[in-house]
Length: 201
Image (cartoon, rainbow, N blue to C red; front, side):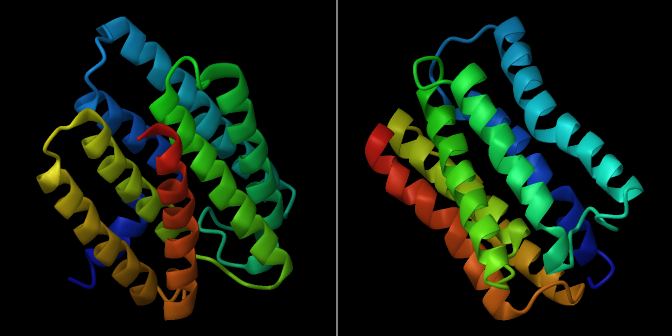
């Protein structure tokens, strides 16, 4: 099991959470999007939240600003988190707007708030787990979607809750975080999503 656990840190790296959220949105949403519309939405989100950050990662690594995609050092988190906040702002103001796709808008708005919290905490020398931030936000979003669309997503929610445990255990096994850092990251991801439920549920 110890050999399997690190895989959860890579499969559920926060950079991929936006894609997982979009796919689950299409699975649980009742709006009639055709295939081409789904691909276009997914492409926009992937470019802004996955491909651009990966390119920036390689740039920062070549400049010696970061040494790993896991951002294990607190000092290395400030620039990537600031860029993440900026990219999410661009996404919700230019692409996934409140008029176009309100559910995803509020998910990414919550993600932007979570990123800002993690960014602010880095200046206080507090290291929040970005993995837990991402997976807890995703879990809250899916719970909100199930209520919003009146669909039974119990198995998906149970799976996501289990994944929270696996991801947390993975980060502990890799000695990337302490228990308190995992708890802080969990709260940073979960609370903004729950607060924003009141805007769209």
